[in-house]
Image 1: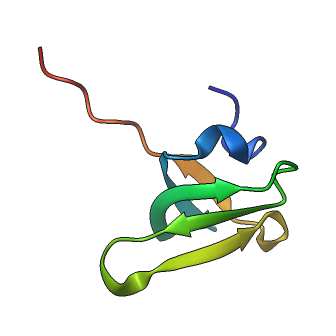
Image 2: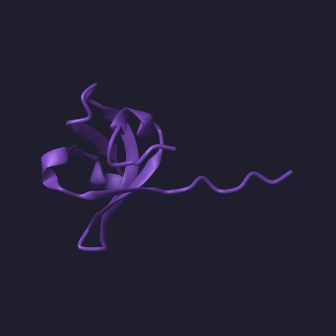
Image 3: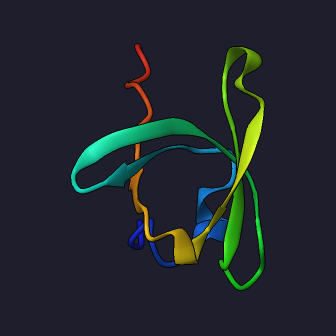
Length: 71
């Protein structure tokens, strides 16, 4: 998979972590992304709703791997 920080369109439907200075800020599912990958909407569990993340926010975007499928 290409670097998660480059083409955010490839992350739609996937769970990512937002990190700053190596520390986890939030994690959520990428709900949508601009065609130019300048912004993405992250959806969070519970009452946290969603958040618009801009590339200019300078988060490190880490793709969370999907759990392995059993048999």
